Image 1 (spheres, rainbow, N blue to C red):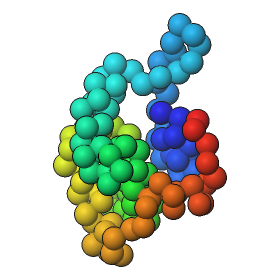
Image 2 (image 1 turned 90 degrees about the vertical axis):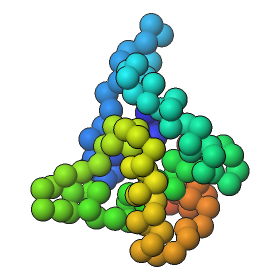
Image 3 (image 1 turned 180 degrees about the vertical axis):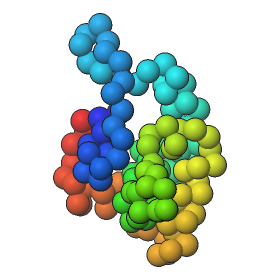
Image 4 (image 1 turned 60 degrees about the vertical axis):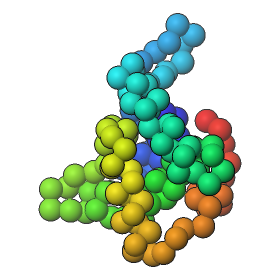
Length: 121
């Protein structure tokens, strides 16, 4: 959630508020957690390292290179976390479109942090 919110803030996308835990932290609500648990094995399977996060970073990198997802379309629609978690087709289509536009991206995890700096928040 923190990674998405950092990315969303930078690109003017909807942030996720989440719910407060007993410890005072914020986390995804139950519906989003369920969807994220369904996507995670797909992301791990698609990740050459088998870790899943590289796939998520590839998706974020693809989003930031495609103006359509950032609101530059006839409706002003922007992507949100729910769109990525909705089903296994959305994130794959997004990656396919991005890769078709510019060829296979380099390791997205490394590329993202080359720009952003490493934080695990």
